[in-house]
Image 1 (tube, rainbow, N blue to C red):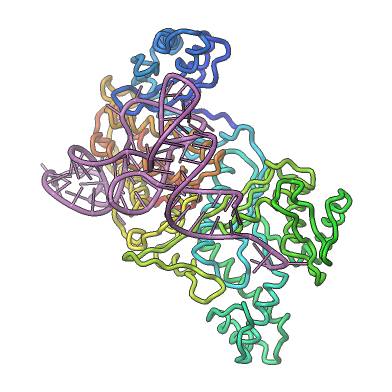
Image 2 (cartoon, rainbow, N blue to C red):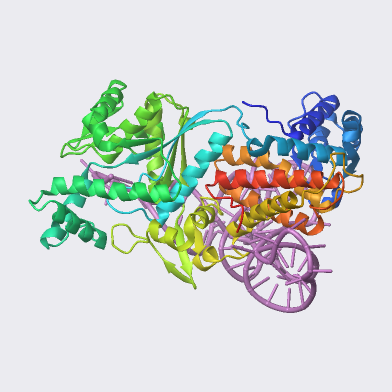
Length: 540
RNA sequence: GCCCCCGUAGCUCAGCUGGAUAGAGCGCCGGCCUUCUAAGCCGGAUGUCGCAGGUUCGAAUCCUGCCGGGGGUGCCA
């Protein structure tokens, strides 16, 4: 792990040391921002945690902690106070704040990198939509979540691979081929088949390129190939790059399914009943056992997926992370059971269950159904509101919450639109640097005069120092939406700073100090936007 | 029946590995451009954190029960 180089680390260390003096086994305390700025820059609950151990009232303990902290921090801190039930609040000195900014600016786009502790290797599987149709808006949420999570985990210092599992074999593909054949010949689409207009268009295209005529299996294979090309193009538009594509057909052809079943049979977990082959998933917490091979001899989707997850384990990943739709949540128990059956820890399998996405315009909702023809395509959404808004809006809420995307708002080029709001802050800073370059002011390199750290500037700096913590939190909790929430707060703090603090022409010492604040802010915003796959424009 | 998610301001939601007077955006009302982008900023009003118990010095947050909404529960994938 590269050095975190975060000014807050030093503060946390000082608090831990001072707390240890009160009692050797004080639990790790929180370093927080107080609820109101007049209370100070930072706050710790260490004294309240220590009070029961020490056997003294929290406020008394806080007083002693404050004393110890004062000695340790010296001139780095301006004011230390005991407040409320026993918080110790710290107001940092101007010098500490200015030094902190210089450090953040020096770290640039690497500020906040490498915070994972300990770093792990993860395989993140996401989207994995069946190649029997174009990507939907729902896939858009999966892609925004999965890709951003991967970016965040990587930036935090973990080893990450992104993979797409392609269901290019099995009954759905047979059905897809039969559906195309029906469309070409003008027959009825088979029961439960694919009825979307795109299937007819696909049939039309294949017929013109292959006048000789093809059987349903060939049509299915060709159809998958064409749909997959479209899916890849959509992913590229959405700025998603996969490290690997796992194919169910290849897995089956390589005998991976049989191998996996043999291994499970050797472990005594497979039995036959009613003509089918079953896995004892109930032994590992699943509600009931599951079928691996149907009575008709065909392996189930589950069996193939088991083989795939076994393959992931064999490739040495510590964490297998699957991004699944809410309709697959019943699947989690059995898959985890299968992974445990192979000898892995249950924690090695992690799942994010994505709730649904609704597009809203003027109060109207459009729901999506893939097996019919009327679903909302991701490409249409990208055409409509663009990649930046699509990705940002998908990550404004926890993935566990259903989301409504207001298309009018997402299209709007105004401060009401959160993605423009954040991007605008970045552009504004770039504009300040352009102006500074044009004017070439003689700012001087000395320290800024004392008493020039405005409250808005102080708040902004404290916010920037929060970046590594926000990244660590988003990574460890698998919550990319923390990043969109945070970057909006950074932008808001910057806009307030911009109002109160003149930068270009601020005077000797002060102008370079404020330019450093601007540079640090610009880099933090750019980093955060990049973590969610959104552009940081220099002009708007 | 069982499993998962949700219930916080008029609306959409953050906060939920316990901490100070519960936040943001939208919407509503009122201000601010001769200086670095007004795609911005400032001020104002709004809450039984679904209900009831429990644990705790302290609960929106943890536990139990209940109510309401959504989703899932296939030898489909």
